[in-house]
Amino acid sequence: MATSPEEQLAAMVASLKEKTGTSLEQWSALASASGKAKHGEIVAWLKGEHGMTHGYANLVAHTTLKSDAGSKSAAGDDLVAEMFAGDKAALRPIYEVLMTKILAFGTDIEQAPKKGYMSLRRKTQFATLHPSTKTRFDLGIKLKGVEPAGRLEKAGSWNAMVSHRVRLESVSDANAEVIGWLREAYDAAG
Image (tube, rainbow, N blue to C red; front, side, top):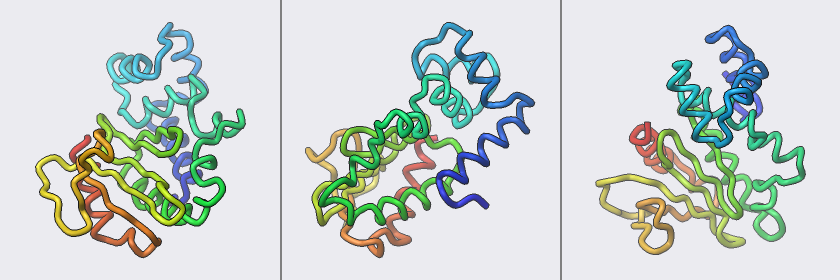
C-alpha cells in the first residue's frame, strides 16, 4: 500500500489508466481541448460527461491547469515549504503525520495549499492544517452538530471555514482521537 504522498499519487495515476483505459496525459489533453478554463468547470465536465469520480477529476483538473503540487514545486511556488520556513520548521513532522493518516482515508481528497495553511476537501472542505506559531500547529475540522469538548474546541472567530479547532504541539498530539475526528469530517464531506 502506498504510504507517502508521492507513492499515493503514483498509485492514483496508474489506477486512472486501469479504470478508464485513458492515461492522465490523455485526459489532460482532452480537458484542455474541452474549452473549460477553471478547475471547477473541468471537474464538473469530467464527472458529468465522463462519469469520473471526484478524486480522479480533481487530479486531471490540477494536472491540466498545472495547479498540482508537482507543478507548483517546479515553478518554485512550493506553498507547503513556505508554510514551514524559518521558525515553523519544527512543526513539519506534525503536518507529515496528519497528511499520511488523512490521505489513507481515500483517493478523492483535494489538497489545496494556501499561503499559510493547507485546505483539504472532498465535495466540501473538511479540514485545514495551519502551522500557526513556532510552537503550535492548529488543525481546523468541519464537524457539524458535534459539541466541542476537551481538545476539540469551537473554532469561533479563529476560522469561519471550519467548526472546530484542535491545538497540536507535538507528533504525539496527532493521536487516534484526532484522526477519528478527521475521519468523521472526511466521511461527512463526501
